[in-house]
Image (tube, rainbow, N blue to C red; front, side, top):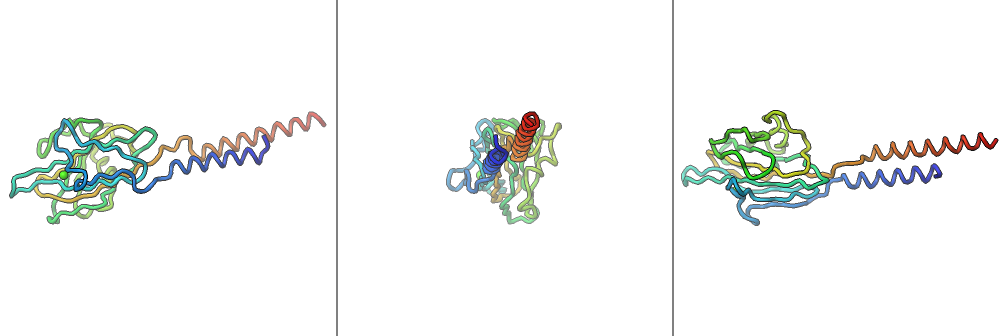
Length: 215
Ligand SMILES: [Ca+2]
């Protein structure tokens, strides 16, 4: 193979790999006001298949003490094979109480194995976190990792099913969480370039050796 053709093929493969790993905007969206209130039933969290790109989840959750109602939101999201979940950004968190803390907990798989409200044992959780009004634009996934059970989970999350609990035991709140999903970069563009470089080096070496033998 000629060196120029060899490098050309390596670069083409690298471009393809970079293109596959680039995030695509506006993937799957779940909005409670459109698709319905998320399930509060442990046996059947609302399923949600994430897609490549930014997946916004918008809803309302929490407790209305005057009305005596609780809105627990359980979403069982799936990261498809070949993709990974890089982050869950708190895009929006609105609560009229400036001191209120919303509670988020994450577990692997479904159904929901832990409790609600005060009745959360924590043994089944990957981790949990509080969110308040100062924490917009933070990565909830890293906040949950700060309170991870042993062994702590890795970020990004790999393909599979997970369930997220969203609740507040004192107040109600509105939220938007944006799940950022990317392609697993395998093989990487750098690796393909390295393979291409090795290929070109070997073909050049063979040509030089053949030339020396023929001289
Ligand atoms: Ca809700």
